[in-house]
Image 1 (cartoon, rainbow, N blue to C red):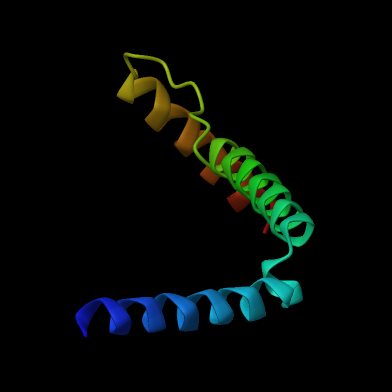
Image 2: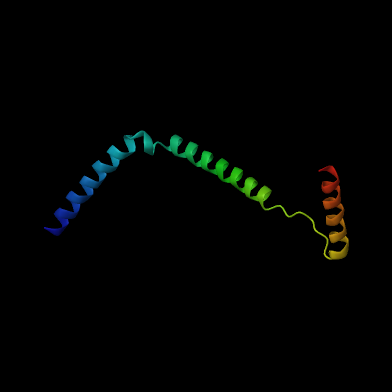
Amino acid sequence: KDSAQQVQAMKAASKELQTAFKNKDLDIDNIDKLNDEMADLMDRNQEIQAALGSAYSMPDEIDEDELMGELDALEADLGAEA
């Protein structure tokens, strides 16, 4: 009896798979196309992430006195324009 039930289950599964494979969503060409599109999107995402993650070179040692001098000069220039 168990063997007969197993055979019936296999027949039902086979029928369901045949029906599913006739569906365009499971067409291998559509799946390949979808995979290619996803790969392209992932590549674009990596390019965007690389661009966003770019480090702007900063000197290892920043002379704070020089930086404050530049800031004071900018403030003086802005004050003179006003």
